[in-house]
Amino acid sequence: MTIRYLLILYVSLILHEIGHFITAVIIHAKIIKFNIALFGINMQININDLSLNRKLALFFSGPFTNILIMLLSYRYRQSDIYTMYHLNDVAYINIFLSLINLLPIIPLDGGNVLKSILERYIKKEYVYRIVLFINIIFLIISAYCFYLSFSVFYLAISFMALKGIFYEKTLILEEKIKNTYKKFM
Image (cartoon, rainbow, N blue to C red; front, top):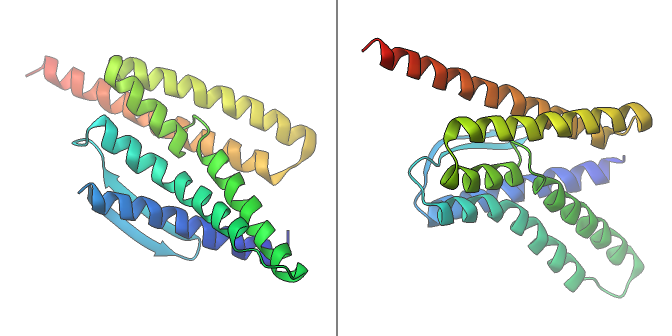
């Protein structure tokens, strides 16, 4: 990977998060934390009080931003080969980011979409287990693919799945503690 690809990836990730930020402002979601760091932008948004439609709009806004960047880069390619070469890279990286972010694993946008839809129809304790199971499956598959190919892509997916597993396990533990505490009240 060259510096140019990393720069395109970095800017695309920042624009992805800005897409989430703009949508959060439009739907009046409460932004708890907003960090700009060396490795990009990180936000925490309170989604507990949002309707399902607002949650979906928030989660899809990041990948939609990447798709929009991809479409714009294809649209504004010029005839000279140098500009076309760079805009093709921008397009490919952004479509890749949007597709990766739609994988159904927490903490990615696709995992949050799946979790939000499941929470509407299933008890939370079962949703946690389903999401945890999906993350474990993705961890196993991506770790095996990393073992076979040593591709950074599979390592990143493994890391995201592992991060989601720890997050969901924490939520399950918090729920058990709340339920135990309620029994003593």
